[in-house]
Amino acid sequence: EDQVTQSPEALRLQEGESSSLNCSYTVSGLRGLFWYRQDPGKGPEFLFTLYSAGEEKEKERLKATLTKKESFLHITAPKPEDSATYLCAVQAGSGGYQKVTFGIGTKLQVIP
Amino acid sequence: DGGITQSPKYLFRKEGQNVTLSCEQNLNHDAMYWYRQDPGQGLRLIYYSQIVNDFQKGDIAEGYSVSREKKESFPLTVTSAQKNPTAFYLCASLATNTGELFFGEGSRLTVL
Image 1: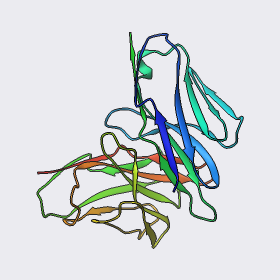
Image 2: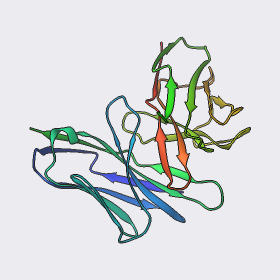
Image 3: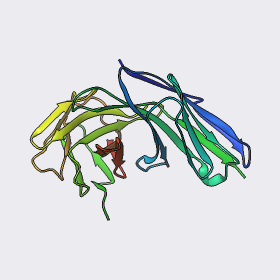
């Protein structure tokens, strides 16, 4: 069974204090690893897709990296508007069906 | 604008009543998904559909039903058989070339 574990469950940072969120996974036949941002009461919003170990993607203050067993979302000098829940998901499977499994998320709070 | 539209945003239901949540997309995506999100838990897959007139059970399908008569529409019915229906429901469609899921804004169902 595919599993996605995110840590920590909650993280409180001072504005400008850099940190990393972790996503470890166990899947058979990884097709892609995804990061989403979710604001309270809203649907998740796509951030990054990573396909293979060693790959990195960046967007503003966020940088996602991937190894064979985990992914990190690095947040550099965060601002209060970065406060949200960050979800990690993996896509696996063969053939036409592409199952996507989500972690429970890391709730990030950035304090001014 | 292209996207996923869910309605209603908020819904209250008495015990024993069925309720249908609407999900419409204009992204021309073949695959659509319904997820349920509860506090402290990740998104859990209820049903998915890869093509019109075809759908499959996800991990927590009991007490739910769906139909896929049109490519654009994937409504979810929460039946009276669902023991704990109060939750946040998210509909999504899949961009098969990137694996990215596009989410609606969600429907919050409360059973009184």
